[in-house]
Amino acid sequence: MDLSQFDYFLPEQLIANRPCSPRQGSRMLVGSLSLKDDKFINFPKYIGKNDLVIINSSKVMPILLEGNTKKNKVSITLHKEIDESIWLAYAKPGKKISTDSEIVFSNNVKAKVLEKMGYGEIKINFNCKKEEIEKFLEEKGKMPLPPYILKKRESDPKDFIDYQTVYAREVGSIAAPTAGLHFDKNIFQQLKINDQIAEVTLHVGAGTFQPIRGDINEHKMHSEYGVVTQETVEQILNCKKNGGKVISVGTTTLRLLETASLEDGQISSFEGDTDIFIKPGFKFKTVDILLTNFHLPESTLLLLVCAFAGKEKIMDLYKSAVDMKYRFFSYGDVSLLYKK
Image (cartoon, rainbow, N blue to C red; front, side):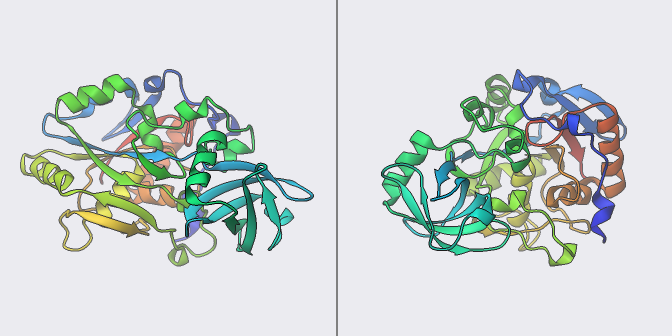
């Protein structure tokens, strides 16, 4: 399997830097037997009476910080708490930061660089306790938008609403589960009233932005913490028993559900870290339909949707989406995919 097989042409003007407004008005490309150009507001029409829609309730943390070293202004995106005051983070520009240098975020909040890793990753030690760090993030932190957006513009107050799902409640992600960004409260409540919503939690980590470097089979995903409760398991089993389909809202939800189904092929409760890397050849056990945005060329998520719906199908669908001028990536439009 060569990574170049998962490349496609994408005009830059189709990359969305802001979401559709209103969010439920985004376009939805339905990839069933034939392609259908639709709107997300019609998503409930694709849900059968026995189907179950599963969402990721994780909430994005405002962990994008601006700081200064002695010589340079730097942007720091925290992504994993190691200890009470020690975090892993991504720094830009990483080349301007050295081990043992100090990053000043405010008069009271500073951090020492303990270690430099590859690709801009650093380990830092804050000069304050966890409670103070959390308070500072609440007051000064910005939404950690994807790198390709931050190249075009800064994260701003509008992103606190736009880059969060309407049902987010479990704090812990460094990136939004973006398929859920299309839901407004009315669509969500409609599904909830009909008992067609179940929840899991997967705290999205740094792996979502990490490109594949080199051999696909050598790529290692960052681990991410997730929870599938017994209550959700029972809802899924009842759905299957009644002939319904499990509809995953987003690749994060799908990865967690399939992780919880690895042991014996049937979903069971799960709590812990997952580093599952889904690529063509993977056998799906739980998810039947996937609602997901359009993903970057040669990315782990593009490999995932190719595994789910079939590589030929996906590459044709993406070409059609480009031709129809769909909007791509985290703030873009959405696709509804059926398991091959």
